[in-house]
Length: 377
Image (cartoon, rainbow, N blue to C red; front, top):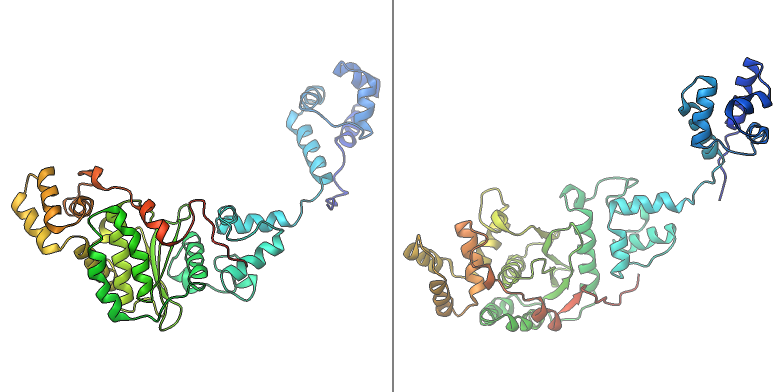
């Protein structure tokens, strides 16, 4: 390590000697005043010993100046003599401040290495030709479309992991007709959480690459739709909320994007797909409102839900919800999820919003939750 070159910063002893000369004090005089051995004063004056906080206070009283004066002299001197840290420290700090670097290493997306190799790995991960082109880094020449669309670094890292995995998947040629026909098959899976294990295979048979990647901290991402080329759609999901209603809503939402050929020019990234953002409010983009409407109707046909709510208002008893679910042949959790949004009662019958991840992952191409897919950069 290199040492800082600051020869103009002297040891505190230099300034203490000046104060002594101004007062015409000898070393033994100062030792007497401080109540210490003359050898201690000699070592400080010769730069052989530092000024401790206690000695700084003692010198302050002796020379009638603030103790901080001597403490700061010692601090400045120590810093001037301290070795410079490796350049990797600053680079790692920059990378970690932009991306969840440690989490990406932990998840096996990139390997822990020196700063130069880390930057090279990130460049390959984000499919750019040089580290200078990595989105969100301070030295990037210009904003990327991801930054302009306010896709966060955490979301971007998740998105590119989905891309990385999707490129390695082999599926039959995509057929829009097959995907539309598959909706009826998927609909038959809604009555029990365990049936969701068939969903990945059904999508793959239609030529849709379906990838599940565990969400990164702070990303709040639920799903994504994009195309590797004009004939290769990809659906990525995080199963951020391990609930049966959320899984099917997000999945049908992304399927709608594929059917409408959204995401061909740039990825459709769906984050915080809940509450008003899962509805048809005017503030949402048109394509999101259409996908939300299709997803809601898939989970629970909306005209039937309208009728149920109108007939049962203002009392929505649990037994009525269960009976309604049986009529629709869907799990009660899907009805509950839709009713919570309609009624703005997010605690309503939450016990029916059962977990589903355990059923989906075994039949899916999934990365996360302790499982790392082997992709080398």
